[in-house]
Length: 105
Image (cartoon, rainbow, N blue to C red; front, top):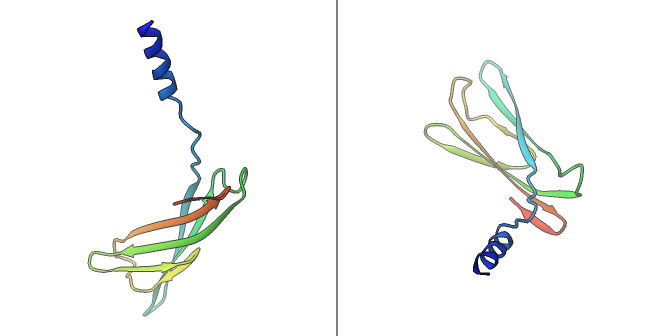
């Protein structure tokens, strides 16, 4: 009886709810002229969000860093002019979206 009760408790404890896992992606474009380099970043949400559930992306938050400084901006498409084409940079994107009255980051 104890083994049966333990097995039932383990099975109940192992149940998980379905998780929503939309994907975000980044497209980038670098334009270069004699004295000006522009890094353009475009965010996109794919996966289940546009297909199955209505979702609203309420905020796009970008952070772009080189070895010395970080810059930030908001919006689905952003532009940074602080970098050289030879720089190594780190790009971070945080999106806040609402699906069925729940907010996800």
